[in-house]
Image 1 (tube, rainbow, N blue to C red):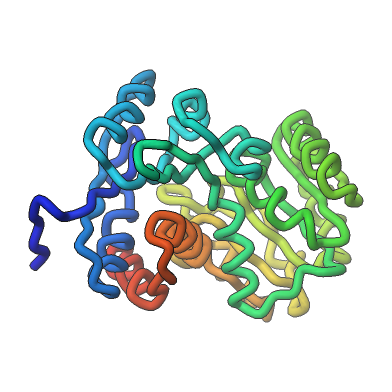
Image 2 (cartoon, rainbow, N blue to C red; image 1 turned 135 degrees about the horizontal axis):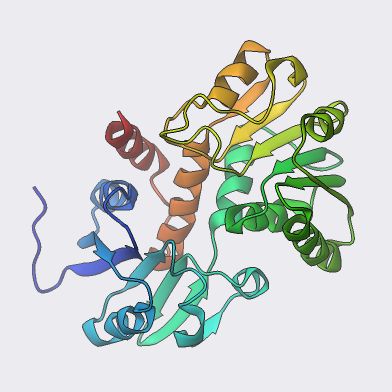
Length: 284
């Protein structure tokens, strides 16, 4: 049982709603695994009140925060500085309180990069198909755009995909194509693709049976990652596995995003095995 005292360091996550967050289970398991006197809590912060939450971090001496929807953009004006990735994305998911100075980071894309890397996936020279153009998709595109040779972003509305393409191209000068969701667009893009990442809500509870990709379009030499982690194995992941493709779970992206935050806060290597076990326990 955790012993909380006046010396216990406090970390947390803010969002709205926040009741289903897995971060406390993952981060408290990490603190326990390496023997840190720290606790991680979830704070439900209503829309429009991010400023007060950030002030509270300073006032209460909270060491660090994760930030989830709808506050990833709205916390920015209240921080003292942000790293380059958070600045370009216009989105923060991690805050470090360093002696009262608040620094913002975005580890979403790093989570995807590390998940693929740990799974043995090489990005250099590859063609990546990214489904979706929301905040998570933008973070993934920015994190992976440096290394892949070609990027195709497909979204319900091409305008959002075009905006991400401009951001990535300005930074990395890569070959980028965009398109709107249609069976024909997705099928053609996948014909010579190396990596497919779903960054949409298709397949997420309660839409477990949904997938934007038909089984027949999947192939053994394709790597497939679905950033959806609930369920742990989405319909897309099941279909990809049946086709013989290499599958990377969305749970791994969540794990590595959390691990990157942990390392920013503590300066210590994240205990991945303990964190993964805690996530799986919660989801089961």
